Length: 166
Image 1 (cartoon, one colour):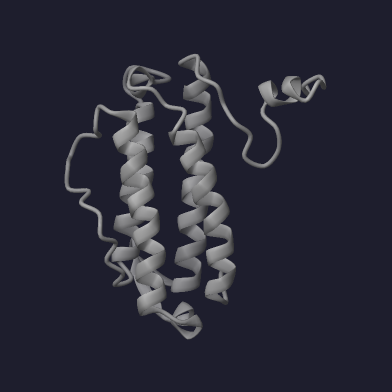
Image 2 (cartoon, rainbow, N blue to C red; image 1 turned 90 degrees about the horizontal axis):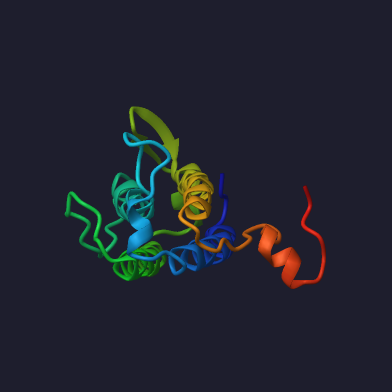
């Protein structure tokens, strides 16, 4: 849970940047990649990250200025990355305009539970991290390069002249 907005801004800067790196590696063809025919596609997960930046803060009164009303993900990987970037930037702009550190203690009904806003921001980051992990599996299945988020990816070890850890 966050107790200061500066803590969140610092973490969000890194996390949103890492997500954008991943989104920018997607191709239009890769968006249909699935583990099974009835599971979520890579395009759905990527688009879901942008939508959640709009939907979750809206439950706290923050209005992220991105239209996420489309029911189907865009068929363009570039468009999904652009929507994500706009949503991420708008989130920070709206929080800076409307919240202060004391706001983080306020409580909202979040999915049938009562959460402090500092916890909501924490969950927003965890939610994004969770789906990035799913995306990296689908990206490898689609033959795409994966970048490390919290350490080197397998391919990055090789680029550093070191064997990848097993």
